[in-house]
Image 1 (cartoon, rainbow, N blue to C red):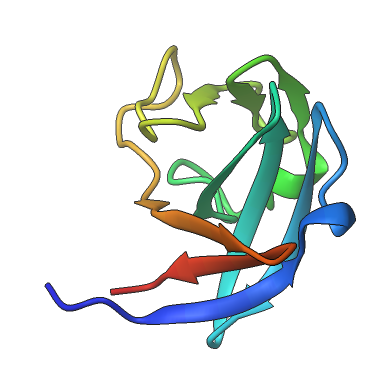
Image 2 (cartoon, rainbow, N blue to C red; image 1 turned 180 degrees about the vertical axis):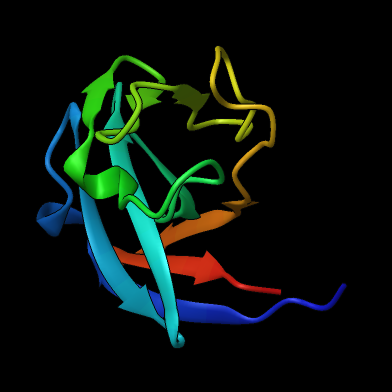
Length: 104
């Protein structure tokens, strides 16, 4: 898979211990600020049609607002029922206060 780095936003736009949703390269992406790092996943839950940016972030876990399933934002792993399918994650690069997402 080739790299496709796209500028998403400024680092300052991603609050610590919170999540924002953005359209990046035509995709709905969730960006998470956790412990000084930034993580990115698809913004739509794999179980229901809910935006993860509307959920509750607790450490590295995002809780879907629809059925309270949780994903690990680092790996995309589904952590509990009713989720069975992981959410896609994306590599992040930060340069000069700009956040880039590899949509590869």
